[in-house]
Length: 225
Image (tube, rainbow, N blue to C red; front, side, top):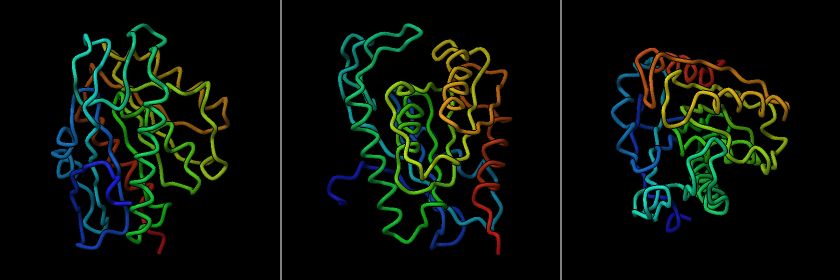
């Protein structure tokens, strides 16, 4: 499997042998390096031993950017409110992220101690991956994103109780907050319980949000023993 895995950065937080994983997907035109510096800022407790994985999307032509080749999880055909995109490429990216999850399970991480996080484009892929994965996951962080496959997703029963926290900036000029709130309704229509937080920011991550991300990870990955 390793030959077909997405190239990724890895940062271990806590013990050398982590017992939990966070797979964090970047947005359009970025890379895994984007969110790597946030790990120490989260200031997680020492008893949480987590492997943070930051995959790099492959370079592809992006239509809305004049066909310019850049890191992207899928092509975006138009930037209107309905976000026309290449659903085949999104599904292919979700399959690659699912392969990373399976690799973590092979490395000894229980699926219920694996969190998916995604920003913007990465969040759209994270929705598809998490909801369709055939084993229960620990949680999903959807940041400044939209539920691109709400009409086509085939959720797996294993993740019907998946904890989902959506986070969005109220002044986001790239992905309007309307799309974040729409995702709440779409997910609830599928039977999911969703937490929603908004922040006084644009298409970015803020300090208040980082505190909420840390709180979610502590809640989802705490040990009961």
